[in-house]
Image 1 (cartoon, one colour):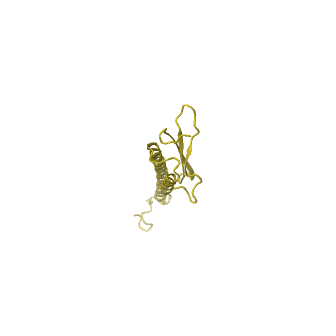
Image 2: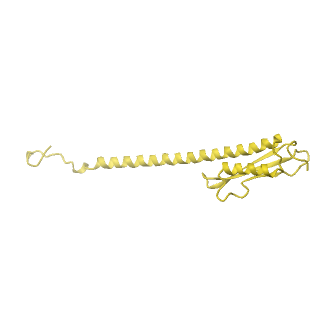
Image 3: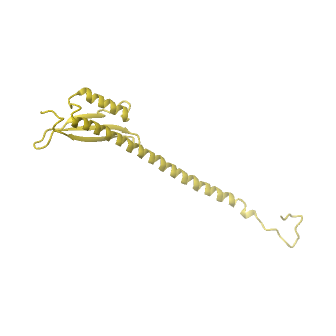
Length: 152
C-alpha cells in the first residue's frame, strides 16, 4: 500500500477512486438476474401444478361418468331408479369440487330423444369447478344401450 507520507515525490500511487463499488454493482445486477430467473421458474411450477390438478379432475370426472355408463349398460342400475342416480350424484359431489353452493346440475342423466335407426341413449353430464381457470368445467358422455334403457 502506498500512503501520502511514505511515497516518494516522483512516484504517484495508482488512483482507485474510479473503480470503487463496481464489484458491488456487478454483484447486485447478478442477484437481480438470479431473482428474476427464480421468479419465472416458480411461476412455471405453479402453473404446471394447476394444470396437473385440472387434468386429475378431468380424469376423475371421466371415471365417474364411465362408472355410471358401465352400470347402466350392464343393467345394474335402472335409468329411472332415482335413488341409484342420487347415490351416483352424491359420489360426484364428494369426489369433484362442485362449488359452494354446488353448481346447478353438477351431475345429470337425461334421455336422448329417440331417432329412427339409432339405439336409445342417455346423456350423462358432469360439471365441476376448475380452480386452475376459475371457471366451471364440463364433461358429457352419451351412453347407448338397448338392454339398459326401457322401451318408450
